[in-house]
Length: 412
Image (cartoon, rainbow, N blue to C red; front, side, top):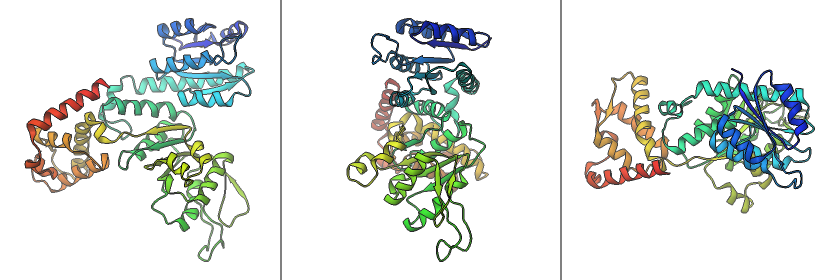
């Protein structure tokens, strides 16, 4: 059966032309009225939607299509929505992409071009439908991520939405929350998945060496430059460059990164020629970049270039429902890696894990389980195997608190 396609536009002639051009390959539904379009969507749940942002001929500023976009994606996040805009409506187009639109198309409509875009959107929807028919299947691991809380499911959905585009992503959150894991998952879900994924920790490389590391250099650019060296940008060509701790980037390098995001070109240190590159940028930070901008420590224009699609990773203490699944996942993985017999957690060990504040987040949990797997002689891990003292864990009180926290996670 052909995939379902909903076309929403205030011009009936355009709808008729599009229906005629597309009905051989899709089950086509059309509407020029906001309320009617919502009813059709709720009943048919189409794979792809095209949306004219302005549905009121008497008031072009009334963006009924934007309202529909929010309602459609809140009901069916997997729907691929293509927003149709006026020629000079970039601001609303970017706003639509931030809300989760698959792509945008500027009028006037050229049917052959739009057909290609719709076909791609439909194909990607089908791939995701096959791979993710049930979100619960993610509970035992989705591209290196584990969890069943509402917050982690929302992150899974976020990854699916942004992976299909090349828009820059800025991931925020405390250290150890899994920002690099999310960046890698976005890459693996994208069309770049078979191409390089290159990681640079901007805080781990001395400032005077970072420019060479990122942009490379020409022979003779400095005293030790005996041969040309390609930087991380060029090594990531056709793939993804993940810039961790982007807040550590010095002002001169912020300027060079901004220039790349604008022009998609770099210049090696000591070079005179620009190099065209096809690289997606994903950045991460544990800093409050908005405050850094206010304090003139981070460029405002770069901040907004990176923050087109932002994601804040929740700390583990706010994902209590995920603590035990994560711990069990690490146990299985690390027992296999260290060729040890399978281990399990005792009820008391689970209680101890649930009540720990996890200042180091998921990284701290993985390190704790790793140490227990290596050092413990037991097949059933107790709190002491995990480094918790029993006399510091009043089980009758803490277990009630842990259960209440999990119940609150379900409610929210």
